[in-house]
Image 1 (cartoon, rainbow over the protein chains, first blue to last red):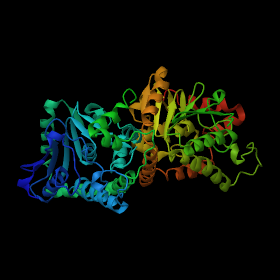
Image 2 (image 1 turned 180 degrees about the horizontal axis):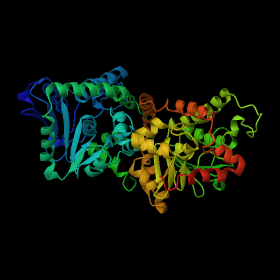
Image 3 (image 1 turned 90 degrees about the horizontal axis):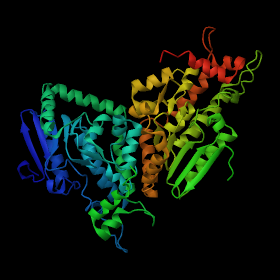
Image 4 (image 1 turned 90 degrees about the vertical axis):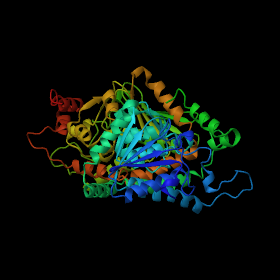
Amino acid sequence: MELDKLDKIIYEKDGNIARITLNYPEKLNAFDFPGQGGIMDQLYFVLDKASEDDDIKVVVIKAAGRAFCVGHDLTKVGFIYGFGEGKPGERRPSQRTRLNIDRHWFIDHHLARLFLHPKITIAQIHGYCIGEGVMITCFADLAVTSEDAQFGSTEQRLGFAGSGVPYINALILTVGFKRALDLLLTGRMISGKEAEEIGLVNKAVTSDKLEEEVNALAKSMTLLPRDGIAIGKATRHIVYNKLKLLSGFIPGYYSHTFFTNLRWEPDEYNFFKERRDKGAKAGFHERDKRYAGLV
Amino acid sequence: MEYKYIIYEKEGNIARLTLNKPEKLNAFSFLGGEDSDEIHGAIADAAEDDDIKVLIIKGAGRAFCVGHDLSKVGFVYGMGTGQAGEKRPSQRIRLWTDKKGFHDQFLKILLHPKITIAQVHGYAIAGGLYLAMLCDFIVAAEDSQIGLTEQRLGFAGSGAPIGNLIMTVGMKRAMDLLLTGRIIDGKEAARIGLVTKAVPPDKLEEEVNALAKALALLPRDGIAIGKATRHLIYDSLGLIGDFIPVYYSHAFFTNLRWEPDEYSFFKERRDKGTKAGFKERDKRYEGLV
C-alpha cells in the first residue's frame, strides 16, 4: 500500500495535525474487512503513518459525503468467513477461520492501532455514524459532532443483542451502565445533540461550525509537547488497562464469532435470509421498520 | 402455578412478574422467606422458558418495591428480641444468610439470560432499587421516588451494589445517593442516568410495553449470546464480584455498635415500632438534603 495510491482515504498533513478523511461517499463510507485492500486497510495504513510521523501530534478522523460512516457494507457482511451461498450441502466455515478473522480485525486493528494510537485522536462526525462509526467515536480521545448527526449501534438489531463489538466497557464508562444498555439493546438512533447530553461526544455544534470547532480543538492540542503527548497517552493506556477498557476487545471478537453460529427460529427476523431473498437494502429496511413506533 | 405474593403472566415472548404485596408496598423478605422464594421461582421459570425473550418486573399497588420489610430486618439471623443476656447470632450465620440473599439471589437477576426491564412507579427504594438496578432497563414514572434509604440505617455507603452504581451515575452522584440516602424523583433519576427513561405516570405501561416489544424483535440465540457476552464484560469490570462486598459488608454492619448519642433504628423499632423507627430516621434529615 502506498500513500499516493489510496482511493478510499484522503490523508493530509497540516503542520502538527494529520487529517484522515473517510472517502467512499457513494457508499456512505461503508467498511470492508482487513485484507481486502479497501477503506479498512487504507484507514489503518494511514493511522500507522501518523503514528510514525514525528511531525504529527493530533489526528483528526472525518468523512467526505453526507455521512461519517454507516458501518460495514451490509451487502457483504458474513461472506468474508466463507459462508458461500448458504446453499444446502455447502460446508460451513470452521470456527478457527472465523475466530482468526475477527481477532485480526478487533485486536490488530481496533485495539492496537486505533484505541492505543500514540497521538491525540479526534473524531469529527456528521450525518450517519453507525457500527464502525460508533466504534471510532468511542475510541478516539475526543469527538465533536454536528447537532443533527445520527448515531446508532444498529448492527445490534441483526441479532447481536448487546455483543459483538469491542466498545461495551468503554461505552459503559462513557455514558453509564443503563444508557449503554439502552443503545446496545434497542439499536436506536440518537441525534448529535442527545449524544452530547449523555456524554458520548464532547460537543455538538451546528453543521456550519463543525470544521472550525474541530480545527480550534486540534490546534489547542498541538500546544502540547511531543514527549508529553506520548507519555500522556501511554499513561492512559495503563489506566484503561486497570479499568478493563482493554478487556472489551477479547469478548468483542469472541462474541462476534459466536454470533456467526446463531440459529434463527422460524418466527424470528433473519436479515441474512431477507438479504438472500430480497437484497441487503430490503433486509435492513425491514429490520428497522419492525421497530417503528416502539423505540 | 399458584402464587400468593406475586403474579406471573406470559404474553407471547414477554413475561410479566408483578410483586403483589401492595399492603406492604411490596416489601419482601429477600433474606429467605416464602415471598422471596416466589419471586426467585418465577425468575427461574422465565430463564428456562424458551418462549420468553423479555422479563418485566413491576409492582402492584402504589409502589414498585420498598425493599426489605423493615419490621423484620435483623431477626432473620436470630437476633431474638435484643434483650440483655440473649446470645448474639454467630458471624457465620450472618455471612451465610447474607450470601444467599444478597449474593446468590441478586446475581441470578443480574445474570438472567433474558432481557430484563424494571417498570417503576411510586417508591423504588433500598432493596427495591437494587432489584431495579439489576435489570437491563429501568423505565420509571416521572414522579417515582427513588433512593438508597437503607443507607441511613447506618450503612453509610456499604451493603449496596456500589460498583454498579458508580458505573451508572458516576462517582460523585453515587456518593451523594449512598451517603445522604436521599430520595430523588424519576425525572432526576433519568437525568443522571440511574434509570433508562422517565415517562409521565399515565404513559408508563404503554412505554414499557413498546420497549419490550422492540426487544422481543431480537432472535432467541442472539439474546442468549448477547447476555452471556455481557457477563464476560461485567466480569471484567468487577460488576459480578460487586456482590461479594455487598453481602460481606452487610454482614459486618450487623455488628455495628451505636453510641448513646447516635440514632439507632433498631432500638427505636424495639421501643416504638417500625413505622416510628424509619419516620424518625428520615425526619432528622429534613431541611438538610
